[in-house]
Image 1 (cartoon, rainbow, N blue to C red):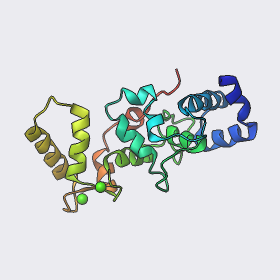
Image 2: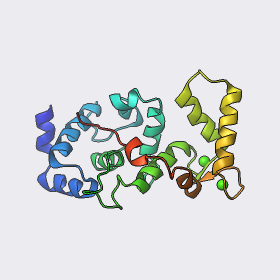
Image 3: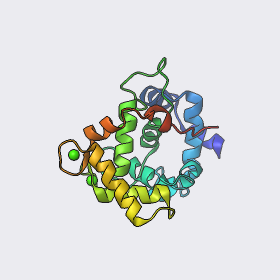
Image 4: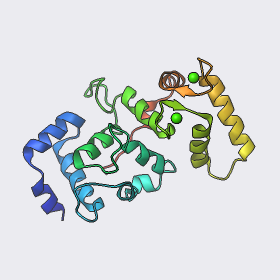
Length: 192
Ligand code: CA
Ligand code: CA
């Protein structure tokens, strides 16, 4: 199966994807065969369900939210082709100062945008208290009471909200992430 997939990927395509995402040709070919393993009915596209079959996402408490963010680049399509899949994975490629330019998909700014979309469930550009609570729920599970979660959400919004609309905009989000090592936290090794 891996061989057949590798044959289908043209060298020009590999070069374009490498240029676009920063993955090496051998990584691209390996991810291509993974893409096809996830694409159970050989449609050439992955659905949300297919993506949740990625073990790194399946074990991640935020896997569901990450998959949600996969589908917010551009339009509201419900499927990802290989090129879109690679662009999404590129956000999680570890950032290396020496090799990666600031505008790359794995830059701090792009990682922050991706993280922001994980919280902004309705895609209106703001993280509301309800949206923050929903993510907190997923992260902590059942170990913390509703009241405690509510006060964590209130405190987080109070700290981050600068313009007083009781929601967190992308700019406010970036400000409160200033001291967080986003480059490291938003890196997932998809290949072992
Ligand atoms: Ca929102
Ligand atoms: Ca605000």
